[in-house]
Length: 328
Image (tube, rainbow, N blue to C red; front, side, top):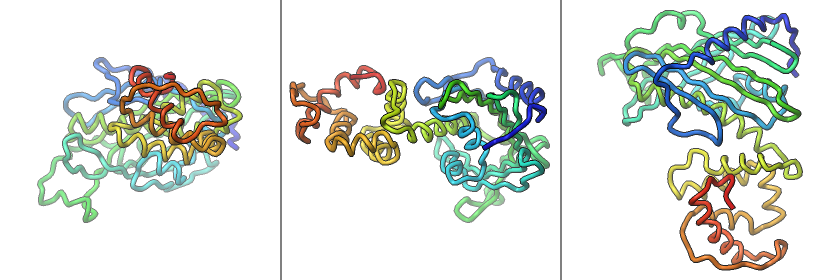
C-alpha cells in the first residue's frame, strides 16, 4: 500500500505533468494502432532525435493497486509489458518515493534495419496531489541530461547487437497521472518526451514512442484479465473483445491470441470451464471465414461442439462489419 502526504511535492509535480501532457504538437498524428477507445497522440519532427506522445485510458483496477503496479519498476510484469531488455533500480533513494532507474530497450526499425539499443537512466519520483490523485515522474538523470549527439557512426565502430555491440545513452521524460474514478476504476493520463539521438529516423522515433504508449494499454489489459466472471459488466465485455484483437494483423494470429486470452483472462477461463464449447465457437468466429448462416435453436446448456462451430460461423458477417467488442 502506498502511503504519502500531500506535502510530497504534489503541486510542483502536477504543474510538470500538465506542461508535458498538454504540450500538443502541431502536426501530431494518431498511432498506427490503438487499444479500444484509448485517446493517443504521437509526434516527431522530420529530423532530429525528438519524439512526443500522450495517451489517456481507464483501467479496471483499484486506485492503489494500479499506482503500486506502475511504481513497481523492476517487477517481472513490468519487464514483460515494457519489452525492455533490462530494467533495474540503481538507487532506491530515501523515503522510497524517489529512485534512480535504468532500462535498456531495442529501437525498432520500420525498414528492417538494425538499431543499437538505447539505455535510459532516470530519476523516478512519486507525488501525492490529493487523496485520490497521484503523479509519477520519470526524468533524465546524470549524463542523460546532456544534449544528445548524432548517432550515425561507421560500420567499423558500430558493433552488432548479437555480439553485445555498442549502446546509446538516450533520455526520456515521462509524466503519469493516476486518478480514482470509482471503486475498481482508475484513470491513467500519460505523456512522454524522448531524445533518441540526431541520427534516428522519424519512423523509428514514432515506433518507439508508440511502444511507450502501448505500455499503458498493456497495464489496462493486465488488470482487466483479473476480473472474475461474476463481476463482469458490459464495459468488461468490450474490453475483452479489444484484448482478443490487440496487435492482430493476420487471420492466423486471431486463434493464437484467443488461446492466450482464454488462459490468462480469469472471466473467460471460468466461462470456458462452464461451457466447454465456447472456445471452439470463438475460434470459429475469429477465424473470419464466410459461410451460409444456419439457425441453431438449441438451449445454451445443451449446445454441442458442432453447433458451437455453426454459431461461430453465423457471427462472422456481423464481426466483419462491427468492432468485435460491440458486434453480435
